Amino acid sequence: MRLSRRAFTLVELLVVIAIIGTLIGLLLPAVQQAREAARRAQCTNNLKQTGLALQNYHESRRQLPEGWLCNTDSSDPHHAEEGVGWGWSSRLLPYVEEDATYKSINIKIPIASASATVLSKVIPGFLCPSDAGAGKPTFMPGEEGGPDNDHQHPDQTTGATTYARSNYVGMFGSNSWEAHEAEEHGPGEEEEHHEEGEPYGGNGMFFANSRMPFRHVTDGLSKTIMVGERDSRLGGSLWIGMVEGLAEPIGRVVAHGHHAPNGNPAEQHFGDFSSRHVAGANVVFADGHCDFIAESIDTNVYQALCTRKGGE
Image (cartoon, rainbow, N blue to C red; front, side):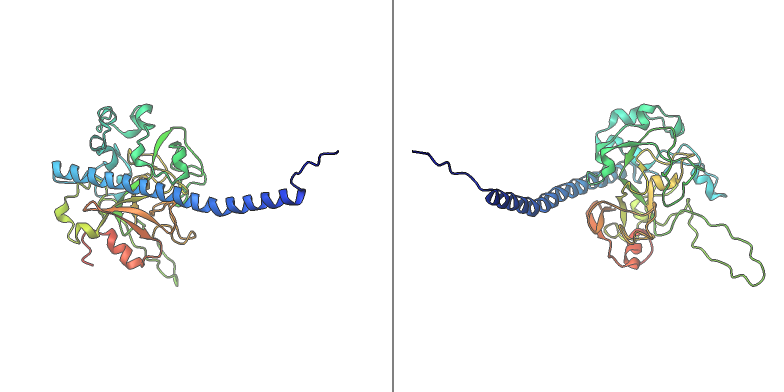
């Protein structure tokens, strides 16, 4: 007698493989969504802790930290890109359990003169886990005047010094910090008008040597954005502050409200808020509560949230 052995046919095997592939295809998006939801929640928590740290700083000193420390010659707004440069995040270190790092900082000397250990110190609470750049928390920012560096992509080329990345920047205001100089026009040429920004006078919470007290936020703390997200796709931000000599040094520490987060890619600038989250970015308001700003928000409403005393 010959024993017959039962086994899968080739067709049956292919059907099983197809079913398994279909199930995996259906499952993966759900897994990715769950992971992104967890990352977004962690990002929100990071911003919440930053907001609490700012609240505690204000409670102890009756004012917020400076947007960044710079030269005080207000006759020339471009001097805001000169000086020691230490920014608002660096002043928060004692309030986010980074006392050792804070004690190693001397705010009387320029950032560029600080030790390589300080410059490259990664603060986990200042990184959004959804940002692919967070997997590389240190980078070499582009230098001022370098080839292919501009206000939209300041890090197309990189410098020689390694700095720690941050995903959270302060709110400078509804207008940019770039001051446009008037140009002479010939006969028949129309004069081009610009909205001029003033590094010493942003209408948000953080600007050069700002030291903003909450009593000056007359629009209401719950209606004024204090800090928000900055993705690393267009360039890297820094927790240490404004570093003289880097491309877009002010934009490394603050953002403006020209465009809604994650808006039209053709209009998105390095100086805007941005994120890897779907359809918007997280922010923390001056009263400490966090919210998600949708990319579809009305521009006028968004810019009203960027100012501290616009009366909107």
